[in-house]
Image (cartoon, rainbow, N blue to C red; front, side):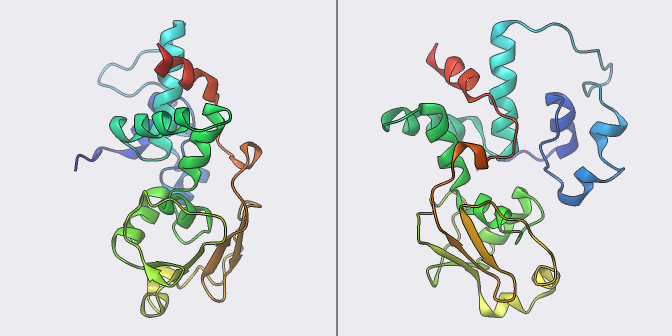
Length: 206
């Protein structure tokens, strides 16, 4: 499957906002966006006044890159949300939040969504006691996410038990057991990224 392999920090600089793709680095003095806020490139330019289409495109690219998805995957979430009842934009964001890799990240088991995706791919995660290695797996209310007993003893999760992780209110987490539970569907206000989902819906509706 195709995968973005270039520097993650270039994506934040291109979108002009922090996408938190590098874990703790994004909140430190090493953050590339804080050090070099301009558009990346050999001859970087200042940001010009954007057209309506460009604004919609940039919003779509920002969210797509924040969740680490390719265009076909991201459009699939929009199309699935459009088929369901309710507000398409909020439904789409709920589907993105309920991806297994994102839930692992939200629980603090991964420093970034990219690391969380690797953790899932490498079969460290159990859902309701069964191993699931599909990052896009949709989590449901009542599901219990835990770390395999053998994996829990590895250095990868050594600091998680002592870390003070603030999880969204739709999740519960027991650091000592490396176990989390989905207690509700994520609400719009639970998503901490600054997202104007209406721009994305307008982009795909054309």
